[in-house]
Image (cartoon, rainbow, N blue to C red; front, side, top):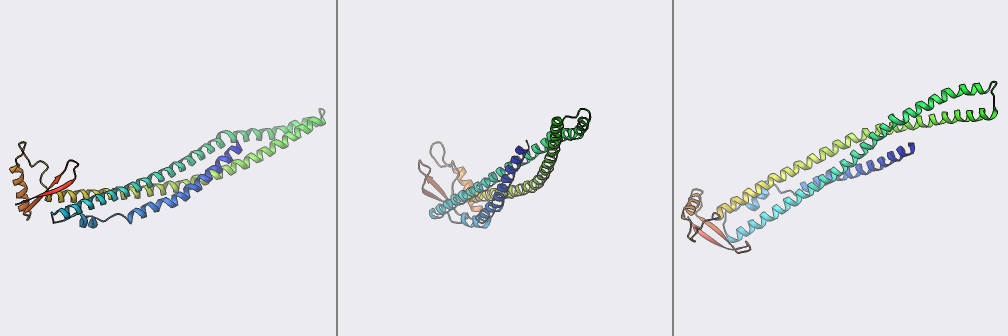
Length: 268
């Protein structure tokens, strides 16, 4: 049992060393790499916002929108992968804590009682040895009992030393684990904060893109069932353009594959 505990402590030491090294590598690397690549709201605005409703401008806005969206999703995925790595380290740290708790229980519930029993034997056996040295003296019996007493004493000393060593190791491990849990929690919170910021940038991107489409495209259903132009809807759009200081609107024309193949321009 003592050897099993020693092996478990050695294994815990290796796992803890691995956790510390990987945590040192992961906690800042992902965050710093991603932060350097995140576009600012101003950069997004400059690439999506346009006052021109031309084919060239629309294609450029579409391309910029897709590129920025893909980049934001890519960075978000990297952050989520970083969180998963940190959570893996957290699980390993939790496993070490479980091992230490198990060792502590074995020391308290198993080895300590054994020490008490051995200490009692060491205390009682010399009395039996005194009896044997009297009328019932027997050289062989005295030798065996004397050896047993010495063995019991040595076992008590060995196990007592082992228990003390293990208790010290458990205390040291538990003291080391608490800061690691805190570092992991702080690192995960930092990554989640950046993910939230990316979500906000995604909202800005979508709003700017929708605004551009709104100012350069007709409503989704400007045609009546008989194929005629929905004048009421078109009038509302034109009025909105006039009030906004604009005098024209461009409708995108799509093919069956939803690819842009042309435009219709309407004057207010």
